Length: 134
Image 1: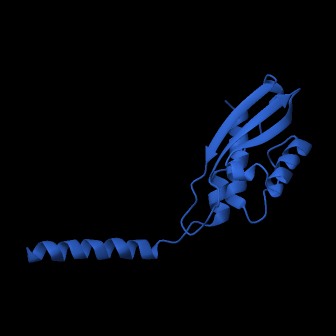
Image 2 (image 1 turned 90 degrees about the vertical axis):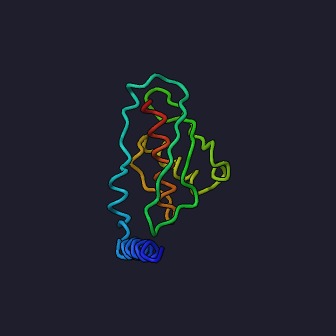
């Protein structure tokens, strides 16, 4: 029985040591891997589209909201109304309303996110991208 405990303890120590020496992924490198892509809306029929995206936040980082569902209206090759459906708490958030305004003004997803909400911003932008690429 004793050798089994020794082996189990050795494996546990090895696993914990492996976790301790792994370094977190840099934010810049991680975000490059989940880049937001421009979408040619002129190829999309006018209408309402729904998109959802859930971001996986790397170890050592935090996102208040990781999953977004949005409703996007496309009219005449441009972004019309963009509504955050989920999380409901973000629907009335002024910073995210400003982000939506930047998308509409530039007619592009290649806009600056919300300062201090990098991962939540990326999740919202990717949800809009998902809506108009389905």
